[in-house]
Length: 355
Image (cartoon, rainbow, N blue to C red; front, side):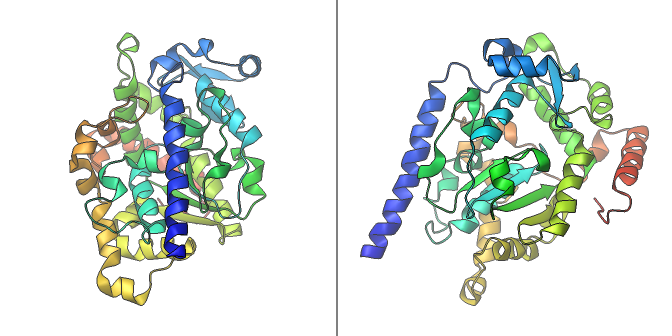
């Protein structure tokens, strides 16, 4: 009875933190919707304004401009969140951090990781948290959630292991992460599908006054590396190279391998995170049950994902499109494909990474 009480108490502490966290987000002056980026000057600190005045600047995707900081591109508000995160986040050795380049399968792997790590607490049945909450709510993102609008949260009350997510490049992670024994899971997707998914997603976020972003315009920016958290190739290569140096801390996965050999790679993931499947769990079909629960088809067809909204007002369905491998074939011209293949080969040549 004492053991059960402790488990429930820890679980309630975690829920209490995220409930209060989401309440704070609801009362924030601005939301995460595109108008925040369009009125960026109203929400930037003086420190951030001073910084961006000295940074390289290009046309933005959902904000008017984006700025190059530590070798990668950010909208002004995103940059402010990154700076605050770098200053204040204190990592624990037991932390788990999911890292992706935008539109690389983030929501899918969030669902898998949450279910995997918490499978002793939540039996896979109708009252599982994934039936009522978006994975983005269950695993908060550093820059989109915790450090929104220059707020400084106190996630120290979250019981270990804490699971977070981010799109940050490796060398822009907080120093406390680098200095800890925390574990990073990096999910990489091929550039053609990543770009097409990003282009669709961005156009759903842009406000009417900005108009849509054409495929040609978006492709030109992506190819030049001027995209959110880009250059894409530098982002993935830094994590790939570091995963070879510290394989005990960084697990590098590809979206395509995860889709094609899901059972193999979810077992790798479980081993890496220190919660391997027991023989009994494998025999009972636990691996298959988790994959079925977290599948794109299952999640996208739940009512909460069809009609629900995230706590900051964005519709859940915005984060689900197709999730298919090779969807780029319906959108990219032969010339676009050739250019992306050539730059990918050039950038990754000699590093042993094939995507």
